[in-house]
Every structure is written in structure tokens, then in C-alpha cells.
Amino acid sequence: MDEPEMPVSVRRLFWEFDAGDIDPEQHADYVIERVMTRGTWAAMRWLRNQYSRARLADFIRRRGDRLAPRDLAYWGLIAGVEVAPKPGGGRPRWAG
Image (cartoon, rainbow, N blue to C red; front, side, top):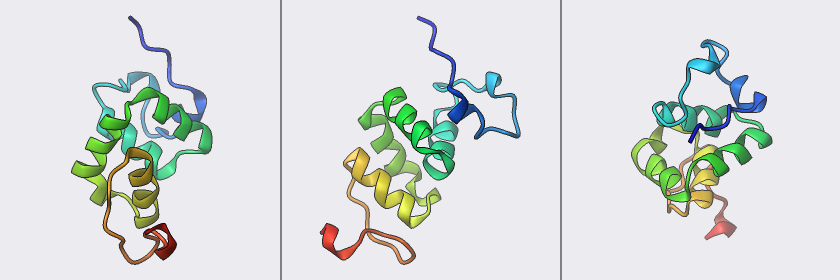
């Protein structure tokens, strides 16, 4: 089954490449990281629909150190991965 083309909200994140050459499965780590760090709300919704929660959790566990503390905290919550708070935007104290 052919995958639908990436929406404009995602394609625009890959300004340095021809976005048509990016395969969301083959280049999953790259796509996930770019959307997690620079994506709009629409791009983040696409990411959550494109990849399973388990796939996002796997990325967080393997490559989460590449994310800013605030992004890591947010995506850790989305993916159900406990991440240690870091200075500069980690989980607020009330988030337990």
C-alpha cells in the first residue's frame, strides 16, 4: 500500500532536501526528530498519526538526548516514556 504524501506542514521542515526524496519509514529517525524539534501543531498531529506510540517511545529512549529538555518532556508524556527532568525546560514540579 502506498503511503500518503507528507503534508505541507511536514514537508516544509525539510528545506535543505527535496522532501519527495524523504521516505518516512526509511528515514524515520530523521523525520521524527525534525518534527519533534521544529514541527507545527499540524506536523505534530501528523507525526502521532504516522508512527505508533511504541515507535515514538523507542525513538525517545534511543535518541531523546538530541531533543531540547522541553521537547523531550512533552514527547516523553505523549509516548509514555519517563524522562529525567533536565535544567532548561524539563517537566514542571507539579507534573510529578
